Length: 422
Image 1 (tube, rainbow, N blue to C red):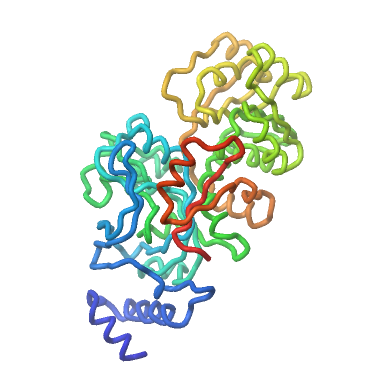
Image 2: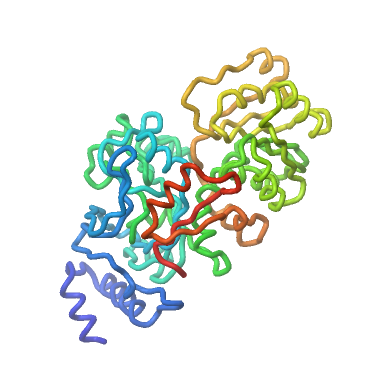
């Protein structure tokens, strides 16, 4: 083993200190000895030379052109603060599908091939020296927050790093205003995580308890959206909520609202099949099928289902302008309306409702500072994302999985792609 260690050490860049030698030695021990359930570095298929890796990756080459590519070269600097993580589970998000079908989302425009995927969990295979000091070790199961901001920006320093203009976010081409990253060859493509492995900062990587599967760990990312929405809504114990849209983010908002203290949630969706899943997520959840109802009927139904007052909190998760505008009609006096869904057009809002009912409308962009809380809720079983996973896919079938998710059946909520399996 000592011969192997010396050989491997001399084949890489020379360590700058005895501490780095110790870290490398421990990592090599992990490679050889710590491989529970088949997990370990010896299973990796990544060819690595310095900061350049050659991997299998799901690449969006252009609008409507998605391909699983082998030996795809990726430039990723590895610093003492970083981890290399083998990817195991990745959820398909609506934003991935929008880039696939339309090639853009607002100012984020695909202009070169990009690896898709940003909801991920995996296993650490390499630890930088500073990350080692933070307690990270080879073999740890982790999930990753996909957005990495400029740590010196005002937004980051005030705790709102999700608003930072130079945040680099997996599977998101940088906007023109993101001057720090759109000229950096390591980040300008906006590569995501549907590939063999990633390099990621330890500061945005979170260990998973043993009883949280990697599939569920991947869904901490969309759950974080719901958690951030519930936090920004300033829920009070006993509040009533309404959620517009029964997709993955809508379901996450349903669970987050209950975990945050709401006594009941009305889910508005045109498919009754979504309600069977929603009502299994907790007590106090009831569905309202809006497919064949007039606006007046929807308003009357929501008010009736919330005790005659209307919901105290509304989460708009459908990205649909009409239902978003209608929410001011049934919201309770003093209600908070949180716009979670992405809208391509201006929303016509009745300002009279805002004034006379003293409503507050707030936009929401991703999340900040909620990953630890989301993991805690999963660990204590206060939230169970398991019922939302409706289909599993092998990595080799990734393109088929995306095509399926573009036009899914009504009962479909979340698709998981397995790069590797636990």
